[in-house]
Image 1 (cartoon, rainbow, N blue to C red):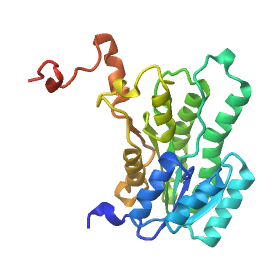
Image 2: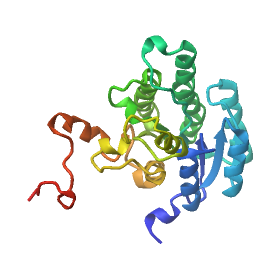
Image 3: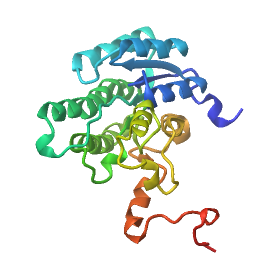
Image 4: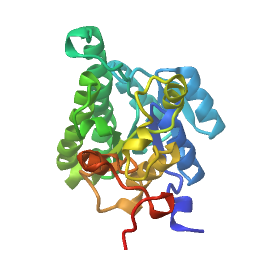
Length: 270
């Protein structure tokens, strides 16, 4: 058995936004590694479906509503167990548009879910972890937090999530709670697959990465599980970027882009 095979050791992890996408993939990975998995999602049926398949606990919850988050925290800990690991993967996205075309309702809801929701979840579960003297939180930001993109509400919300992570890591570190962040690049979840098939992307996102491809959901899940686990016991306040090298390849554009491998007809690097 490898170190990663049973990292959970029966401890409870809650995946908020675990009814689909990266959250679901993370829940399944962590369940396979010995964690007892609770799933919360605005789609309560999806949360219960995923949780049932893992022998876990599922419930519906709007992460942007304080009373729902507090109720969920009390209910999960009373009925399923004290939450040692928290993953906040709930988010809403926005279409590309200039500020004058971006409805304020979209701006408000995006920040309410992505930023305020992350804060409410961290506050509810992190404060409980701090009182017990142990716990680990991973918030999900995005590469949109790292550079300029025409997704003004989404990018702003995710940049704030990354900064919130730093603040909370400092707040709870001496109480034994680690708080980290993962920033995925374009990831092959169903929403992205649909956009690739429908041509809604101006270009394949993989062409802008150093590795020449987009990220697979399990690759993000591996990073999340690592940070939640004791294998990352000295790591807090970190934003781990999982983007197939998008952030390093972009600045190569003015030099003709990232060179292909020699086997693909590119110049030798020897």
